[in-house]
Image (tube, rainbow, N blue to C red):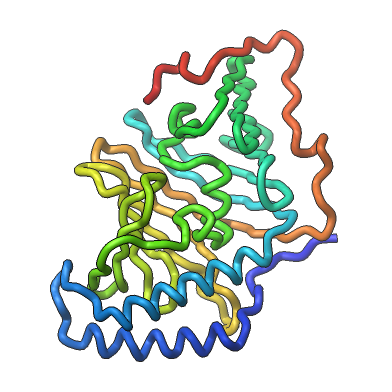
Length: 279
C-alpha cells in the first residue's frame, strides 16, 4: 500500500517559531542592508533554530520512499535530459536508475555508506568505487554530492548533509535570508537560510566553485512541511544540473534486499570508477 505525500504535518510549535522568525527578520532587514552586513545576533539565532526545527521535522519522516525526478545536466559537453528514479528504505543502501525514455535505461546505480556501483547497459560495463568522494560527478552527473546526500536534500533532510552547527558570524542576504558559514570541511562553505528556516542557497566557498539553489513546492495546505521541488547546481567551469521532483511517494512496506540490490548480467566488464578519468 502506498500514498503520495506532500503534507507531512509540522508541529504547532514549529509554526509558532516560524511566525517569530518572520517578525525578527522583518525588523532586522528593514534597512535593506547590503550583502555582507552582519545579522543581529538574536535574529541569526532565531533563524538557525528554525532551520534545526525544520531538519528535525523532516528526519522524523524517514522511511521507505520512491522519487521520480527530471534531471537536466551539462557536464562540459552537450546537454542531457533524463528521468531519474530513486528508491530506498530511507537511508543507504539506495538505488538510482537513469532513463532516457520509457524502457531506455542508460544507467543503474547502487550506493551504500561506503560503496558506489554503476552499471551501463549500453556499454555492458560496470564501474565501482570504494570510500567517500564525488562518485556521481566522476560517473558524469555534474553534482558535488552523493546519491545519499541528494536524496536527503530532496527529502528536506538538509541537517544530515550540511550539519546543525555554524561557525563565525552570520550575514544578511537581502531578499533571501541569512548566510551562515558551515562548520567543518565537508561540505563546508556557506548556507543561506530563509526566514522560515529553509535552506535556499549553498556555496562551497571557493572561487568559481559550486553553487546550489533550492526552491520548494507550493502546497495548498499552509500547515504542511515545505518540501524541496527543485535543486539547481552550477559550477564556474560550466557544469550545471537541474533536478526537478515530479513525484514523491511514501511507502508502507520496505523494499526487500533484492529490490535494493544490483545484479550485474553475465559478461559485464567491471572497472574502477577512476578509469573514466573524471575528477
